[in-house]
Amino acid sequence: MKIKKNDTVLVIAGKDRGKTGKVRFVYPAENKVIVEGVNMIKKHARANAQTRQGGIIEREAKLNASNVMILCSKCNKPARVGHKLLEDGKKVRFCRVCQEVLD
Ligand SMILES: [Zn+2]
Image (cartoon, rainbow, N blue to C red; front, top):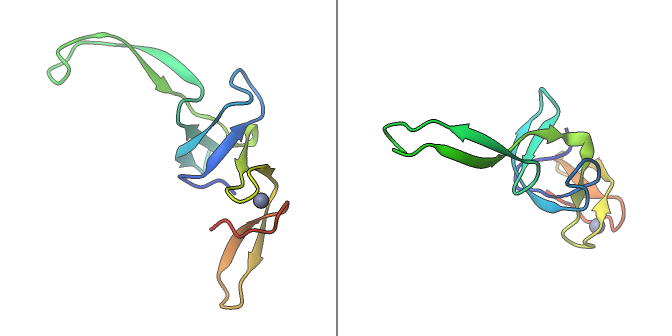
């Protein structure tokens, strides 16, 4: 999976298309991500000892990693991301638009 935690991504499909946000969690096995402020769902919470108060809470739901694109911090465009090997053998991601290394 090309997306990593703390990447800034652009949502390209679904009800939040066009929104951008920071990746908070990645689920490589499911190819899913959670993006800050994107794909919010309302959940009914029961009162418990910690919160003392029930009600409706909003939180982000997982969305498919194929519905987001990494926004390049250098050229600020949704980037097609490639991988390349550096001279020291380290594998890094880079932006195919401006060639900036993203890692
Ligand atoms: Zn770029």
